[in-house]
Length: 281
Length: 347
Ligand code: SF4
Ligand code: SF4
Ligand code: SF4
Ligand code: SF4
Ligand code: SF4
Image (cartoon, rainbow over all chains, first blue to last red; front, side):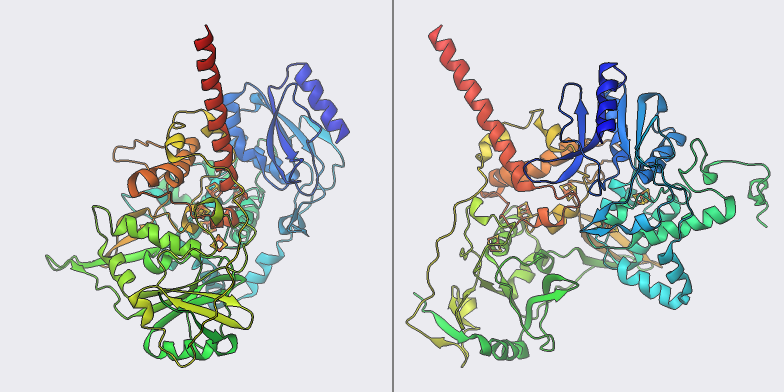
């Protein structure tokens, strides 16, 4: 933490950043929230620990529009998230100073967050400066997905239908997701109306399946969608299952390797699927 | 003046079971850790929370999804209005802030220019049996919004828990109809009147809030807001909806579905323009709608101080604190202005 603060001060002094996005502990309430730190502002209340759960990358597009250069404090998963934004050209790396901090896991309601059991990298895969323990990269186990795969199709449908039926269609999951940034979300399109706006099982199922597909090979498993869902719908299960599928087919885990383009957005003439030639075999 | 009646707490379930023979009775029930209203069926027992119920009863009068007409594309002129439910019902155990929410919805759906037929029928078939709160919950701030935990507006019957008894009083003719029961006995005793702590959040007047329309503070106030829709869905006085058609194999329903000014799709118009593109403009709309527009259009501010928006917010953003911050800014501005005026007089 000391090293991080020192570095940030140095960056401000050298004029290498105009603002730093990090975590701040509110001295009055003790709550830890995302905060933008500027030159000459105190860094004393900047923190990095198990309470720093929020993925800050979601705020970057707004900040880079306001500031020339922005520093950002990153956990491992947030770093993956940043990579996904960079390879999709949503943010330009020249505007970002990535401050990777070795993460030992974060907590939700006093318990280690589930995503942390499946953490692929404790250190941001992209970092201009690294702090703390780097840790090992590893393959996530996705125990939850395994459980689902053991179920019969009927059981699986029942499992998900019970959750989907509860969805309020508040779109908190979409709003917090760095990778959900369509100007007009498919759920908001009226003509044609791909997804009915009412919160009922059929429409909710469409919403969840389409969202999951749109994030296949792009979701960095930051777990934010699941965390903010007011109905506690286990959204990571869907994203993780697709992460596994993409990994199996293309050997890619989103965001773990800087500059690796998501497989579902590249055209490759050697693609075994002949659909591009008009032959769908 | 109607007299107090009382019923032994241990008899309440018998009384309600009796009512349920003739009426559809809605009571608070626990579903997955949360309290919400459901139809009383006897099997679950009866337990009435003495303060805020997690899910508001807005859905009972103005449902999330509501079919208003049906049609069949294969036959011409087949649009048929949906018959509203007529069975008389009792909603028991709602608290003053929810009753105030209904009072506000009445103003919007019944007393304004456009009457909502479906809402009217839901209201007509319902007897509201409100429970006065014995305590204030953590997020409760009704006392900041012109109410108290013992306000009775919109209730047909009010009751309150004291010792081993519930004290009931009918407030309308509708209410009288459910008071005739061998379990409810007239009494000369009355429940103790309570003192409630004064409000915690200073609030400016609707007119003063309106003056903040063009202030830059909205950017600060919307800084971390996701602009999702959950706070407005949870709110007992958020009444926006969209009308859409849902059809399957030519047979369709015209439905109204809750909408939210916090969502970017809310203000999107034909041609792709969006009048509330920024989160700041959407947060402003919600805030002013609660504290100013509502007052200007319907004669009362629409926040009832239930605190549900804070409970459900994924980021635990505090709407009452936001209102207080805004009010503080209004005071600062005023002070500056009076100072400037005073100085210019001296000149
Ligand atoms: S956050 Fe949860 S309730 Fe809201 S739309 Fe997403 S899945 Fe549905
Ligand atoms: S889908 Fe969920 S876990 Fe994946 S990047 Fe988006 S918010 Fe994070
Ligand atoms: S806000 Fe007031 S009226 Fe509503 S539940 Fe709390 S104490 Fe009761
Ligand atoms: S629930 Fe919270 S994050 Fe969502 S729109 Fe409301 S205040 Fe913003
Ligand atoms: S704005 Fe919040 S506190 Fe006020 S009535 Fe709505 S949900 Fe309750």
